[in-house]
Length: 388
Image 1 (tube, helix red, strand yellow):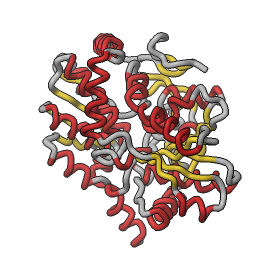
Image 2: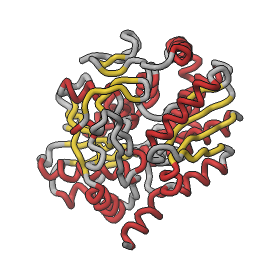
Image 3: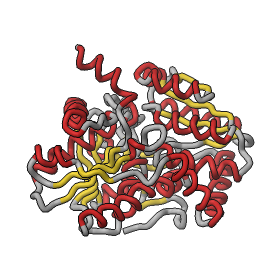
Image 4: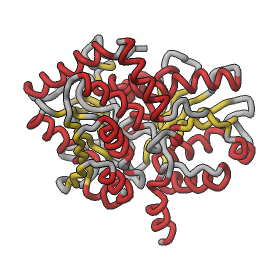
């Protein structure tokens, strides 16, 4: 299995790379150089771990979902509790890592894109803590769906820019953030939230999110004395999933399963193409353009996916399944009622598939589900959906 891709300029098989204007490539090279310089630097590592411990609240638990397991009657289900992180999702892990890198590069203006708003909130939080200017690009439709997160970002001092171009969703927010970077690269650091974009971003995001599987692997060995049968995570752009998979990729007996929305089935129906400066499996329309997508979970509403997920899919190392919005909604309600944990709608896609999988497996099997975020941000949206 191919390892992390710094050595081969951002490629995982045929996927990845950096397809950007020459001026922007100079910026990517500078970011890569600094990432390589600091990722193994003891002082950088110590500072990163300090903030993960003292600010994010890591390590978070690997919780046995006992009542859910008993109700389903199959495999044991464990939940990796990224929902318990400060700001409510896995996004803060990467935000802290990248902002420490920006600090060392002497850049004081941070820009980011966000769909569900959790990466925007995490970025705004980190900027507030480090005293940096923060601009968040967010599709106009997503600002309406996630109005509470918009307020959080503004409360934290960020400027939220609604993007009306295109569909007014995550893809369009990424477009605008990249445009900003081209114009302001001398003073600005683009804090990309998902495992997508031109090299070195996918590798960098994986590096900072790998803390998820580093912990869960140790925790499941402590609890069960064995590795899990399967690790399940929702997959949009792919940051929580690649973090949840990272330390299991070389463990061939562990199934890696990404659950993507049936309404945006990128890895199930997409084809290789270049989007946002990198090559990945992408949903295209009849004109060869990125296809409009829609998911009830704004954070999964993206026509592409991380290049390493594209490679894991085509190489057969990982499986990717589709979950409908209705199935995710049922899982959202089920986990809330049975375990007293309200999951994000994104994470609910992973829960929904784990519910199916557990019933197919024996009581000797173990499933680790990455609960990537909590559902506070989605409660109002779900309320209106159920009211109809």
